[in-house]
Image (cartoon, rainbow, N blue to C red; front, side, top):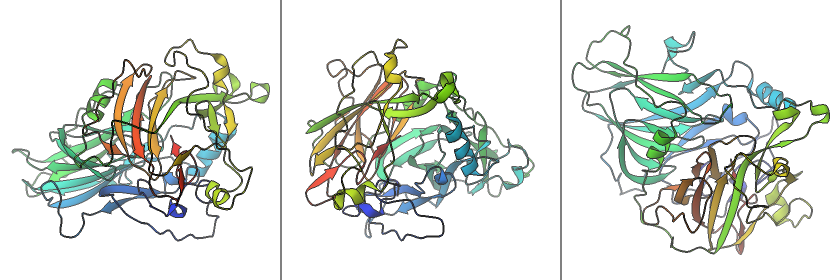
Length: 455
């Protein structure tokens, strides 16, 4: 489950080797899903390796009976699921890059509701089409199920009004494009109010990618919005929207920074009990004879506070409840091993190689935690989507460069967005605050036990 709180029900949370061992081929597992404060669009996906590339879907949580939407009722609700597609079997793609130590090969296409669209060979006959009636309102329930890519999305000659994100209402935000990170969900109203001559308009999505020298799929997926009753030939070429450029960081964070929560704040944001300051980095491990496909013959890795997560032999939740020693440690550090100019290209070389470990951080129930995610230039600077499993959090600050508590006052303690995935900007930082609530009777874990933080 992605974005479901699952109070006191962590065994149905899903992450392999965290709350359960992977479901073996031919076996089955019945999940019990408990909804609590979620409303709007969230989603579910497989958690074992890259199987989520093909096993995923939207979950729609409607308002409680007797209540309605805090926005105009839509004429129709439409799921818009973004994905990635490879010509090869997805497990072959996974095994290939794990064995080589290099980055995964770029996908061959992005998809909207499973279809690549008109700009790919042999797929235009199945392009997703949304038929709309003039002066009607449509609620687009968007999920970015792509494996790696952050996406710009736009519909030609139409605007979108964001009304919810990651299962939580937002103050209405009207833009002519949106940005949706891997793992995120957005609910957007589309008004079919284009003045005559009406006709056919592309909806289009392509990557927002900022890593210098980092390959990515630079293709564009499309669907078509077409008006009913206008008798426009289906052979008429739809109008194509002008999307922001691939590395337009200003456009990306102008949208992201404009989102605001609609609902009352659930806990005090002007204080916290625990702070975890964590770097998020690309790292490398050495290979024998420099034989791997990463930089200088190394194997690529990822790290938080210079620790690269190592999957245990059994799931951490089982080890926790059964008091099995040696499965995980409890010393995930609350700060980096070294403070330096994280966003400079002049970096301590020993930090390129992280420690392999399975570490968690124990936190008291009903306490408030602040997490500062700090991007670095190690190997390559990137935008990092960070997801907190089983929790939503308030995004109270974001900026570029090195986080400095004295110089970087938090951006919003009044109506910050309440999300489960935050995008840490390239060469920048993001600060979130969350409350540790009832996962167990006495204590909760935050990084890798009942729920985990991952990129």
